[in-house]
Image 1 (tube, rainbow, N blue to C red):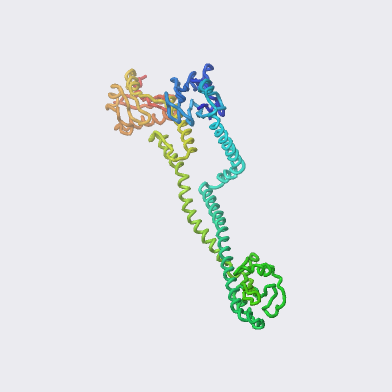
Image 2 (image 1 turned 90 degrees about the vertical axis):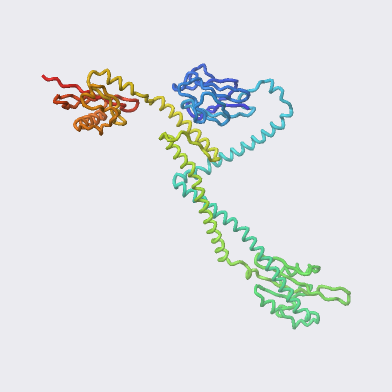
Length: 511
């Protein structure tokens, strides 16, 4: 595999540098293979070695350290996808195809490749083309469709945006699902209508068969058929298509193409056809034995033109069914929305809690437990930034134990002296002169625990003034055993704030 370094931040952000040798060095020096122009990067900060086709990162005792996926390391294996930070330069290890970058294997191994490689290479090219096409489609969607979606996220509360999309999906899905439902319903109505029309035509033929056999046309009747719901027209016609019944149309030829088509289907036992989206035609052959020819012949047809409207679905009922389905889908969608918005907000709530724990010192790490690659990248980058910041703060704002410093200071001062800790407001050290002067040993006591009220009020006042103006000494006067003394206080600065106060008592000499 061919590896490369992709810069995600810093002065070289966006650059991709192939790893084309067994070892490369990174640092501020011009002698390094990859120069990182940053004063906080060491001259020779780190090196990356290729050991048996695996990369190893080695920190070369740099001042600010090297971090892999947010964890400070001295030497570790790295792989594709790992993010490495050298101060403010964040890089990612990526892979390259055969035709990209410089190979890490020798020329001899390449020369030994044979024609058997051609098939995998061809497959790789084909997959590459498909990948390029998918990437182009993704870029089109990202540039044309998603800006509007992202804008909606700026206008609407995120949970309402999720709700809008779920409702849209439900409405569209319900509407689309209704289309085949209506088609099935329509097909069912057509089948039932054809069956009913054919039954009426058969009944009409049976009722008039005896009159037709006697050629007594005056007794033919189609009234029973016309009384059936949905029958628009009914006829009895001969084999030439001429109307025999009803009597008022006897001798005419109806201008109905279905009848002329149907009388040609003499071999069929029944004829039924969808004439239009609304009407169905049904014909039933009436056959008699021909003594002259000695065969049974179709002499007449009973014809029914049937209107499917009587069996068609009620639009109001269909609309009601659609609304009921939609309401049920919305109820299911509400449950999905409730669970989905909780699922989406969970990693952010978890991250916020773990970050607060981490920043307050109550937790030492946070990990993504969800199978979400983009969130993995976010966690990795965030941990890298926080660990780097934490490391810098530790090195810049380190407070060492100053207990010995405090004891030494009070001992070398020739007057009564004591040290008061700023954070705890507690006496941390005092010399024997101070203990004799105040007639009590105050080491370990808090200011508010001083029994001498005059001394407590005076020191409290001095502490407030020294805190507000830490760059200069502050003085009060107080009598001890009838002798007036000055109480002087001076603040000593730590890395970020006042660390402690020195209190010295000096007698006021008379004129």
